[in-house]
Every structure is written in C-alpha cells, then in structure tokens.
Amino acid sequence: MDQRQKDAKKWFVRCFVSLLLSIFLVFLIVWIFDPYFHFHKPFSFVSYRLYDERYTNDGISRHFDYNAIITGTSMAQNFKPSEMDALFGTQSVKETFSGAGFQELSQNLERALQRNKNLKTVLWTLDYSGLIREKGWTQYEGYPEYLYDDNPWNDVQYVFNKSIFYHGVLPNILKTVTGQPRTTMDAYSSWEKETGLQYILQTYDRNHVEEDMPTFLGPEERKMTIENITENVISLVNKYPDTTFYVFYTPYSICYWDSLIQEGSIIRQFEAEQLVTELLLQCPNVKLYNFFDQYEVITNLDNYRDKEHYSARINSQILQWIASDAGLVTQDNYLKRLEAEKQYYLNYDYEKIYTSGQKTDH
Image 1: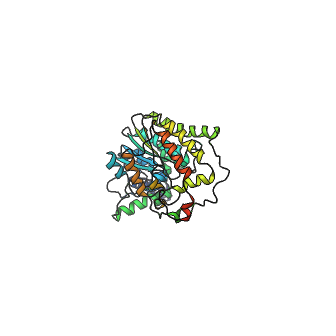
Image 2: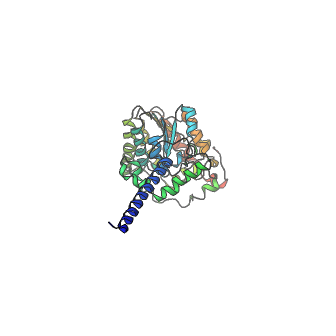
Image 3: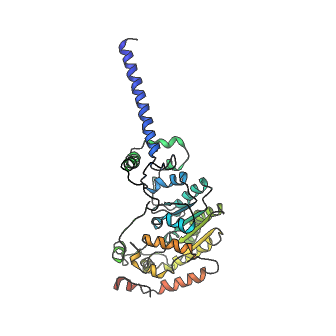
C-alpha cells in the first residue's frame, strides 16, 4: 500500500470517527436537555420551557411524579395544579390539548393511566359543545406518533430533528445558561387575554349563526352522542374503577346560550345533555358537575374572552366549586337541575346583552 492509499485510509477513518462523535454529541445534547421529556424526568439543573402540548404531554405522563391529572381542551389551560393540590391534597400535572376532541383526550389519559399506577384523580373538562360529535372527531393531523409509542428505533425522528433542536433543545440550553427560571406547571399552556362583550363580539355575530341546525336530537345524532361518550369516556373510566374522575360541563357565557337560541338548537343541546348525564351517572367513580346555574358568572361577560372561553379566575373558581361539591349532579337531582336550566336559558332576555352592554343576572 503506497503512502497515498495510507493517507486516504487515515482520512476516511478520521472522518468516520468524527461523524460518529458528532452523532453521539447531538444525541447526548438532546438526551440531556430533552425538551419533551421523551427520555427521562426533568433534571433539576435544566430550565425547561414547557410549550407545544401535543409534543410535551406524553413525556409528562411518562416521567413526571404525580398522582393526579388536569386535562381537557383550552377550557382547562388556565387551571393551576398548585391550586388543585392545595384543595385536594394531590400532586398534579396539567395535560391540555387545545381544540381536542374527546377521543384525543381519552387516548392520552389511557396512556397515563397505563404507565402510572398511582394516578387516582383526574379532573376532566367535558366541552359542552362537543357532546354531539363523531367519536373520532379531530381537527388536528400530523401528530408526533414517534413520541407516543414505545418503539426506540423511531426515536431518530426526535433526536435528529432540526425543528426540535432549534425550537426545543436550544431554548432549554439558553434558559439554563442565562439562569432563567423554568416554566411552571401552573404557567404551562395558560393564557391571558382581554375579556368583555367588545372582545366576544369580535368572534361572535348573532345575526350570522349557522343555519339549518336541527331543533331536536334525531336518532342518528343520538346514536353518535352515545358512541362519543361511551367509547371515549365510559369505557375508560370503567377500566380504572379505583381512579376518581371529576368531570364537568364547561360553563360557557350567556352569549353561547344566545347562539343556541339564534340557531334554534337549544332543545337539541338540552336533550344531548340529559342523554350524556344519564350515561355518566351510571359510573360510580365519576363525579359529574354542572355549573350552568352559576348565573352571576355566566352572565358577567367580563369573565369571558369569547362566547365560550372563561378567564383564569373562573378556572380557580371551578376548583373551589368542585372541592366543595357545589354543582354536583346526582341521580336524585339531575332532572330538577335540567328543568331549572331550561327555564332560565329559554326565557332569558338576550336582547339586553347587546342593548345595555354589560349585563347582570336578573
């Protein structure tokens, strides 16, 4: 072998070793700063930036220490686990999914329950507007499935992912070296936005609501609602009888009820509520809550940024209500509560919302 061949061989070996070292270095950096907790629980010396729920939540389920979960859509994002822990004596985490259907929430919960045998308390928002939907309804595609499964081979999509490195790893490194505090579980996915009628009207026009909405719950919609709740909620809670599920219907603003009146679908919604309530009340480990009789909250539009989303202070109030069993729905009271609800929202003077600006309970 002449000198030229020897030099070429040395160059190839050096390049190969350098490549292996580079790959190992990238893997080590991603493993240490692990932005979505795919490999391990949080290190105390790393300042983590918690964001991007659909990437982060499964890692929280896998590796955090907890015995309670707060979950739901954006209606749950402003819950503070620290407040729940103070009221319920739990060690909780928050795993919310903005815009999720019931199936996505159920699947995430099932993964958490399978992995953590200490998970005995679940706080679950049941979006009232999502009752009458297909069981597999979703508005998101392209989930990072490689984060959800237990296949180590497809983790290359996580380790050697430019987007994750730049948007996940590097921010964690920057926060750590500059001494910035990590994102708290209370702050994770939470939001602060202006509230009040003027902001609600930016996204709600009562004169242009969806037309041709059914007035009553027909046979097909009834079947769809039953499947949605049975397969995404009932089947899950029945698998884990030792876990208590605190489930509540999300208390939307009076403008939401106005939208049902304008659509002509309010009776249909009441029928779906009764159907779902009767299904949930069959589960002994479900505690179901309904806050539609909290009129001072629902008619005070300073509590809402749109016709559905309430501010963080209402999330805190909901925890207080649940802790004191205010709004608890039972076999003995659910029909009476539903009838009072119908009377109130069918007979409310909705015109005064828009003629007098801010309104109060009458």
